[in-house]
Image (tube, rainbow, N blue to C red; front, side):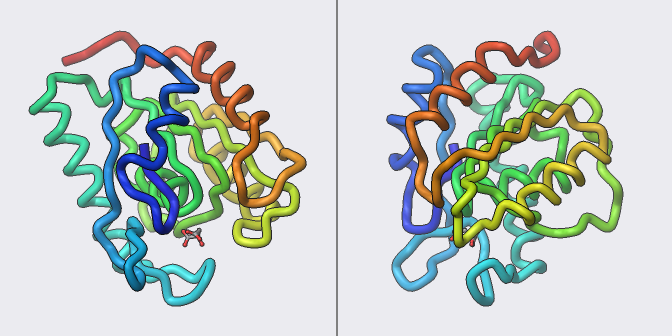
Length: 190
Ligand code: MLT
């Protein structure tokens, strides 16, 4: 679980439980501070990212998942990353830069985080993108570009435009719950 700007590792736990009451949860706190608000990477302005920092933090996050997989004994191939806003953006970056970290992702209000220089192979990865039609922070045309990009790299992407803004709605929970229940990751391989 990857929270939005100003959240922490506890913020999305109620959402996680609503999506799947039985899943094992790993929830991270972004270790970049904007004022006192935790984030997963630095930004220069709203929607303008410090790409070098994003790459560094994405690799840190992938290493954190690796270490957690060893420590707690889970298979990265079974991980579904669920991110909201800033957390969705680093989740998308994780898929683009370190796709071995997860089976797929639920991206709640995401945009294109960066353009990868090495083309990732996302065949077999599953992505649900839920975008707010009236989201002023993560505009639908940018989110749509991310969906196209992920598809070009081979991911199986479900993209839905919701009648909402940046905030999450009951419809997000319904769609993500259904998607998770119908998404199969490859068998365990540890
Ligand atoms: C970001 O910085 O990742 C996006 O602008 C979303 C946010 O406001 O956190």
